[in-house]
Length: 113
Length: 112
Image (cartoon, rainbow over the protein chains, first blue to last red):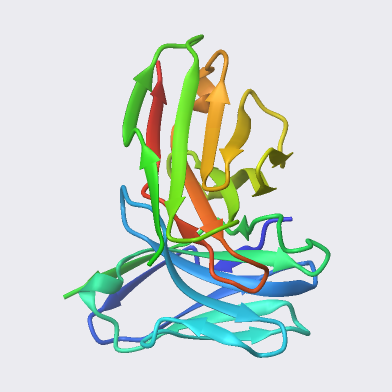
């Protein structure tokens, strides 16, 4: 089942902070975050694993609450380059690892100067 | 370093025509490979995945098929395209569970 992302869209001024949430009805093994610019492929930002391990972008932070099956992506001091659509992709514990990711519908982030 | 290629970058095909999209990965061995589709303004839907040569799993019933003739090559095909096959097709790879998944540049397919 598809994870639910919120909010659907955010408009910020440069320098402001944003939080994007991702929630699943399944027990999760991992959560992956991507940013997609218009007309381009999604770019990997971060992976968060059950047990606390994280790998990803130095300037991006995220959290993963395993019990609540939720993840949040934190964008601080936003820059114009942060604009785009953010997707979370989830992997359930029963997936076996080779199933690929199930993606949310995305959160559109617009940064204004 | 690893790189992933897809071609063609864009394609316009008539309804009923065949399709072949190719994806290759360089700089790694025995990757897990994936095909996703993104309809206009929509999210990403997993179509197929492969854990090895000749091993294909399908996630959704559809008009498409996939093949993996070599370790780092993944092909998406159709015998007869439908209008609903239009979209942005993305190939992705990763090594193992717990690793990052990386997308290729994508193929934008328009079926007329």
